[in-house]
Figure 1: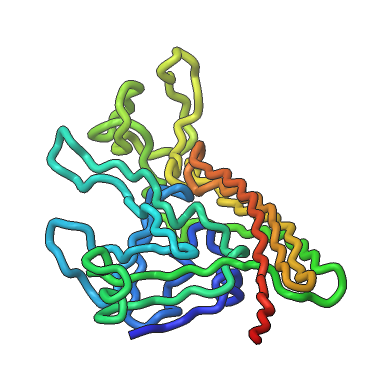
Figure 2: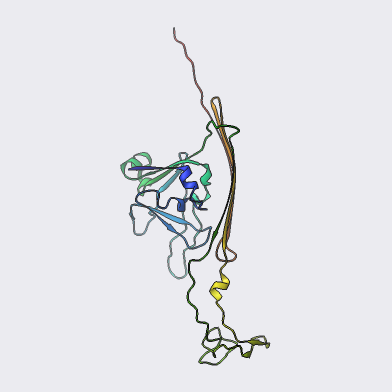
Length: 261
């Protein structure tokens, strides 16, 4: 089975990770997103899992070259926890993609053998086509994200335990907070208050993408160059991703004229 997705469809998703942009666009394809922030990996499954212990991700092929889409070793006990290293498909700039094809079954095995047991994702990048005008494209996008909902926090009782204020405890079962003064951990007198630490800790995520490309065809030569800059600041302070892509590609078509006598 084969299904094709145009590059314009992937760009419209505005996802930092190309794998996330595939969600809902290919029948039978499931994307498992990571909770490790903007640099976290995204696992891809085609029509379910084939192995309980091995990798179930499809082979990624970009312009005929397979790339490593390893997302990190699995969790192997308390002292050998898994480490999310991101994955190779996240390094690809969606603006550079001309088309993407998904193969599964005999057609995939015929091309790539046993490596295609979980399917194949074929990515074809832009190579330069004739454009009206100069062929220069400039685009900038900004996106924001926030957590959908916060857990309900009680706001009646302050710091302490059993109705008694304790400056060295982090529990919130102290006296009822009515603005009375208490002695803080640093010896200062402060009003007894309650806090929503989850809401205070989280921040608004911001994603900025700036892209500049040139695409044109001169007689038998197609030229495509692009520069892409991604800056993604996650919901958790200190977690961010910065990615810079620079692409240059030229395709020359040769024609041989032969005459026989």
